[in-house]
Length: 259
Image 1 (spheres, rainbow, N blue to C red):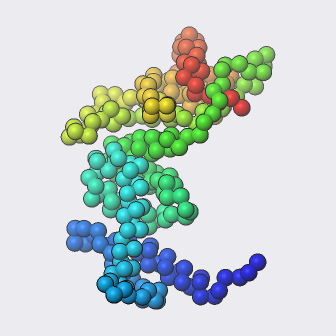
Image 2 (cartoon, rainbow, N blue to C red; image 1 turned 45 degrees about the vertical axis):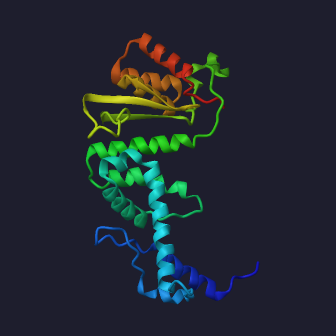
């Protein structure tokens, strides 16, 4: 394999250093402040534009592109924080978790977890989790639903369900799922609500779940069916009819994928 020229590695390192320099926000706006070494790129001036101005434009647009991706994927979080504060948190995140590939859509994958670690309000953390779930579900691949039939019906202890890729379970303490951006703030629930969010042909379907129903579905993603039901009965001692009903609903809703 032909080796790249020696100068290329140095150029790429300096170019990366310039791009990774965060936008300056000290004057109440996001501005490009190039590091002192940017001249090492040897960018040529244009007749109508200085070299520094050209590199600054590129630098600023690079960051604005990343911020726009996160704003698009986290609309509820951005509205609740306010766009300015959201952008500042996004800048901090992108310095800690920089893009590593050509697909900028992947930069959102750790953002909700990052915000959770920042000791922000629970409402903002739950908003980020909701936004993250929606963004992930939009990219869910097609699958074949399990119809409830299985070769191991004679040996139910062997039945292990595989979660379909198009749903998530979330808990909220504020009315985030149904929040209208025209309202000042989401209303706080008297008690936590559990939602099943599913991607469908028109967007999303939202179903409220009994907490033990949600727990059953979570256990089924981690354990063989018999073990999952046994663990739930120890935790909640639900009526057998409820478990059967919840199982039937999960098949009806297509929560399980055929192998």
